[in-house]
Amino acid sequence: RLVESGGGLVQPGGSLRLSCAASGFTLDYFAIGWFRQAPGKEREGVSCISRSSSNTYYADSVKGRFTISRDNAKNTVYLQMNSLKPDDTAVYYCAAVLAWMLSPTKWYLENTFSYWGQGTQVTVSS
Image (cartoon, rainbow, N blue to C red; front, side, top):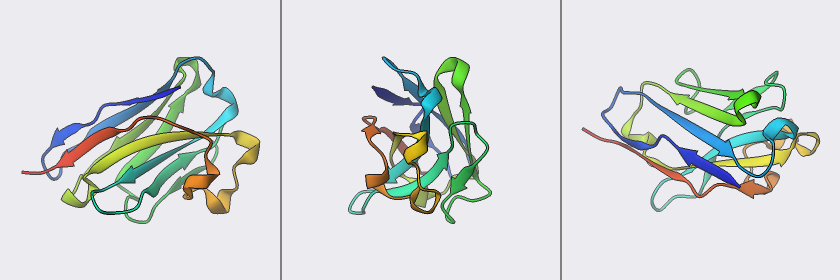
C-alpha cells in the first residue's frame, strides 16, 4: 500500500515536503503521481515522476514551486512544496502505475493510476 505523510498547517509563502512510502511492494517498477482535491472540487493532477526520474511533469499551477523526486533505495517519493498559497490547500494523494503503462500525455488523469494512498491534508492559511 501507499502511505502519504508530511501534511499540515503552514502559512502562505511557507514550505512542506510530502512523502509517499510504499509497503509490501517496491516502487522501482512504478511511475508515481501526486494529486490533490480541495473541498468542493475535483481531484487534479499535480505532478508525476517516471520510474528512473528521467521525466517529471507538473501542473501549470505548481510549476516553479513544487519539485517531485524519488529515492528508490528508500522506496519513497517526495513532493517538495515551496511558496505555498492558500489555493494549494487540499488533501494530497500519491498514486502508482506500472512504469510501462504511463502515458506521458495522460499523467494528470486519475484513471491512469492503479494504486492510491489515503491522502494527507495540507492547509495553507495565516
